[in-house]
Image 1 (tube, rainbow, N blue to C red):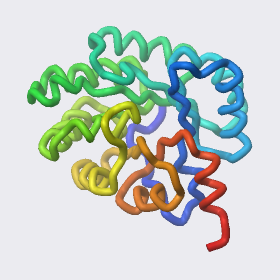
Image 2 (cartoon, helix red, strand yellow):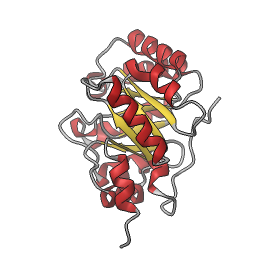
Image 3 (cartoon, one colour):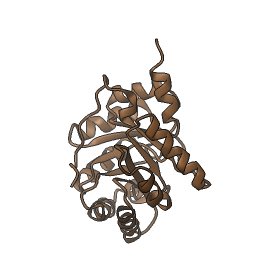
Length: 230
């Protein structure tokens, strides 16, 4: 069983240790997935984040490595039935996922339906069987009060992280949102920043604001940039 709450990333650590190398494009081919995993291994990135259909293949490609395998549930809209999200999570766990990033029931969150949001998350947490669950809030669609409510309900439901964005919404991670999420969850949950993170300097700003993880499709490029002499 994995710990529910991960340790905070240190700003002194290599950026690679915070990077979840992400490939969630619908048109990702087998060759693209294989290349993506090879890149993550070669750059010693923390993890790879892919769609559920690719989990079994990635589990084989990443076997006997330290690279974590992350997948998504209810992605990208969060509007699947709660039972469907839980079942999708069960399949991902069976196929070898180490962590689950689920999209919040966004309409219920905006309506203030605490029960529906909490139960939706709790179902995935139960199906994850001890594996960390990150709740994607899609912060660009929320006001600050809704973001705080999302954090509270994620914690109540047993999630391990809150996460800013799918990368498919109207906006991505911001320093202000990461700082807000960090204040809301303290050191009890992790914070993952994702969406629109295209350079190492911005990634470092997000880490400084309180992020533990960085989700980006440009993981290798960001690590290479971060290691260049300043």
